[in-house]
Amino acid sequence: MFSGIVGIYFREVNILKMRLWRSFAQALVSPALFLVAFGYGLGHGRVVGGQDYPSFLFAGLLAMATLNTSYAINAEIAIARFHYKIFDEYLIAPVARWQIAIGEMLYGMTKALMPIAIFLVYALIADIDISIGVAFIPVILLHTAFFSLMGFSVALVVRHHADQFAINTFVIAPMTFLSGVFFPVSVAPKAVQVFVQLFPLTHSVALIRATLTGATLPLNHLICFIVFFLAMLATSLLIAKRSAG
Amino acid sequence: MLLCIDKLKKSYGAGTALDCISLEMGAGEVLAFLGPNGAGKTTAISILTGLIRQDSGDIYYGGELFNPDNGAHKRTIGVVPQHNNIDRDLDVRMNLKVHGLLYGMRGSFLDRRIGEVLALTELASQANKLANELSGGMKRRLVIARALLHKPKLLYLDEPSAGLDPKSRRDLHTLIYKLNANEGVSIFCTTHYIEEADALAGRVIFLDSGRIVADAAPAELKADIGKFAVESISGGVPAYKYFAEYDEARTYMASLSANGATMRIREVSLEDAFINKTGKNV
Image (tube, each protein chain N blue to C red):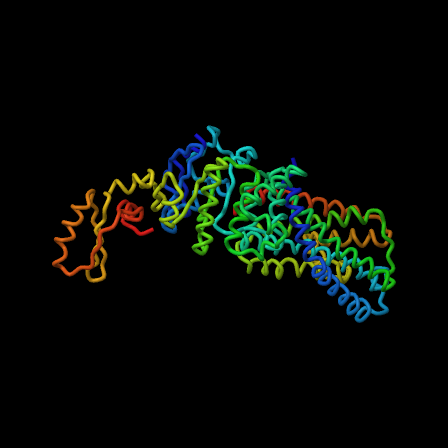
């Protein structure tokens, strides 16, 4: 019944296994640099949002790293689609198109487990003050599911690699810098505060930060992010349905 | 009928890729779509396998209207695309396993079937090798093994021997012959290699600018224009004339000899038949 999800997930995970150490090493470096340079360098001794800055930054960097890892499946799918034509194999198989989207989403979520594991180790090493609540697991799963689906959709919509770079420049980078990863949205100019509500990351960062500080989940962000997720799910399924080789 | 195509049309913008194609194919047939690049061969296969949708017209498999969203219809067919779209980072067995899982095959049944297709395509000794380490001919056989895994009744081969060396090409032809003769798989193959169509197919369809211009057995297509060809080259320009009898051809050639052209008499080929029908080279 779910042969498409099983087959696609099996393929992707086996390829990930082949490249595991390389992928793991890549996921290791960037967060450590950000944490040291921003958290302990520029932000040394500062208190932000009621927390010491490294602890504040930690939640943002975790959200950013998991976003990058899960969204990055778009490059793999694009190569499989345009270069190796492996995507055609899915389209020809007796597989409902929605299963392709879900199979790839599950792969992106699995891949994002790497930075999560790395960050938990960093938290221990750097003595980051976090308190992981039970809501952390569903929130981080929802966050990685959203950005995996976004990566999947982008891979199927773009017609050229250059378009992918444009999306990174005009969507991913501004979202990462303005959505509360590095500083609280509340200190930004009012217009920016309003604008960044359109970024799903603004809401997922707020949720992830709440689950790491023992705070109550902010209901407004939770509702907004669920709406974003459902919209992305519907969009991905529609794009998958219309996809051609 | 295993396959019935009824008035299939497909356009890309202002260009017509397929212009009202109709044909029927029986079980056990080996059919070759022969045409130059851009004739519409790959578009036809893409539509017949559900990869893209036609603008109009219908396709029937075993009398049932083909619905690309119907899994049972898709299990009827196996596809060997023009491009070797295998996972280069996975080994041979794993490539087959992914395909099997996509087709709902599981456990010991899948493992047994993988063993069978590896033996059939003579890849058993390469089972644990990364696909990227295979030769061009072996990669092609892996794509064929993958297409056969779920036991399709009809196998689509899109330019099966493109890019292969002569030895690999010959081995591939032997494999295709075996699949049809021993395994009972019907073959629908596109090619622009005349000799491939002539060697493999019991029936050849000439496709030109999206239209079927001839549909018959290779021998019939050749017999349509004669048995012997006089090929004369004068001033670097070749000319061909066809005759039913050798003596007629010889008389004609004798009449030309005074002109100083280079000439020879040979048997009519499938290429002659194609050029005669379309006015183009394949």
